[in-house]
Structure formats: C-alpha cells, structure tokens
Image (cartoon, rainbow, N blue to C red; front, side):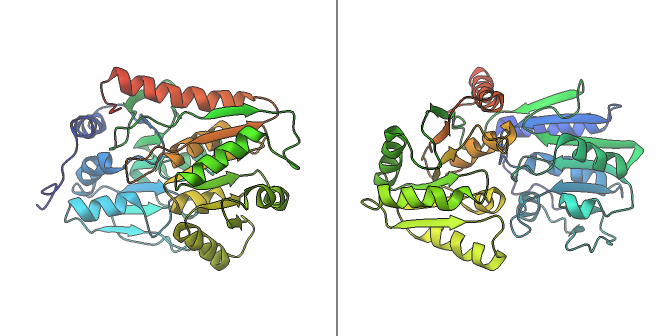
Length: 344
C-alpha cells in the first residue's frame, strides 16, 4: 500500500493526524478542529484513507479555487490513492469513495456519507454557521462522523483539537486599528498615507478592501492623487466584474511591482495573491464581520518567504467585529506560544 512514503509531518501535525484518526474510531459524532485560516489539510489524509479503504463514503467540502484544492494537492503528493472525484458544475454523480466539492455543488447531492469534513479554513468564508449546519444535516446518516475545520468551534460543546500555527511557525498578523473623524469616502488620515508609502517603499504590494463597489472609484480618486509620487500602478477589482477581466487584473497585480489594488472582491483576490499588506477601509461597515476581518489578517501573512505583512483597520469607530477579530488573532498567537510552536 503506497501511503505516506514521502509524507513528513512536523511533530504537532503528526500527533494531530493520529488523534483525529483515533477519534474517528470512537463514539463521538462531531469534532471541531480549530486553526487559523489557510492552514494545511494534510492532517486529514490518514482518517480519509482509513474510511475509503473500508469502502466507506467520504465528503470533503471546501470553497477553494478548483485548480488549487489543498487536500487534492496533498493526496497527490503523499499517497498513491486516486479514487477521488472533484465535483464540478452541478455534475454530482460519481462512484468515487472520496468526493470533494464546494458548498454549492455539495448542496445538490442526494446521497449520504459516512465521514464529512467541512473545510472552512482554506478559502474566504462565504457561508454562515446555519447554512453550514443545514448542509451537514442534509448529507448525513444517523452514524455519520463530522469534522469541522474552522477558526472557531462550530459544533458547540463538542470535542476540540487545536492547531494554532502554520508550517512557517510565524505568529498570525495582529491588525492595527486607526480611528478617524475623516470621511473616508473623500480623504484619508496622514498616518494611512504614511503606511501606504512605507509599504510600497519596502517593495510590498497593497490591497485596499472596501465594502461595496460604489466605494472603489471614490477611494481610487484620492489614492491616485496622493500616491502618484511613489506608484503609478493603482488597479480596481470588482466583485461584479467580468470573470476573464478579473483574472487579467489579478495577473497584472501579481506581476507589477509597487502596486495598489482597490477591491470589494475578496474571494478572488485572496484565493490567488500572497505577499501583500492589507488595508481595510470602512472597517466598521456591516459588510466586514469578524470572520472576514480575521481572514484579511491571515491573508497578509501567507508569504512564501520570511516576510511579515501588515493589516490596518481604518474606521470612524471600533465595532464588536473588529475587536473580536483582533481577539481571535491574539488568542491563536497566545495558544501557539504556550504550546512552544512559535518561531519569532
């Protein structure tokens, strides 16, 4: 059996992988695996293979870019197992024992599964807890095992495992908050301009997140006026934009140095772009719940090199969601430090 011959998990992941496998053989139906965004899914390979080699059905749900699904990449890299199927475009019929799907296609499935893993870690959050639990209920049997991989415990009062760091062992980015009386539709504080100039001078790219499409041209107007002295590359990316055009914008942003991207399209942006600083304008807007804000923090820290990004929340007042996002980031770092997992 060609399994794990090339797999080299670090000690913490190896222990967690074994603990998940052991849990699956017990009586408990539900398991929370709490971790920071964009962490690896390789910790689930052992439990997945344990099920499929017993001819039991497994569903892995993730909203990642179909071309970059982490669990598929890890299975290909570490195992010889190929009896899986990624469900695309409403084509939900497959005899594969392991099915991998986004939320939308999974909701079209009528069959039931023995093991369900819901990965809310590796893509920008789009479903709320009620939608997630509704889907889980729909495709579960009475004895189905369910694993929730998320930044917080979705299954209340159920067993929890914790993985508070990624492979880099770097701390999670804790955001800075800048509160201002200025109308950010028309202007920004000098401190924010200073951060922009500093990021660009350090060779970083900057993503400015805004809550809606009407904010993009307003912010673009004054950013171009203020920042033209240190960057000529200021791009816009709309959630409502044409798919092909959006891909071109993202490709250009990745290629051009000293760039600023203004966007309300968070899913496409953070599915593709790394090594960035992030500024969240209008961070007190209702569009920015704590889950989105914590994913911004994690997105800035997704560097493949030893670079640490910056995250700024710009708002007129601090909201509960802003404070909760900061608290979650701080908590992950505290837990990782206490477990001796951080490399500073």
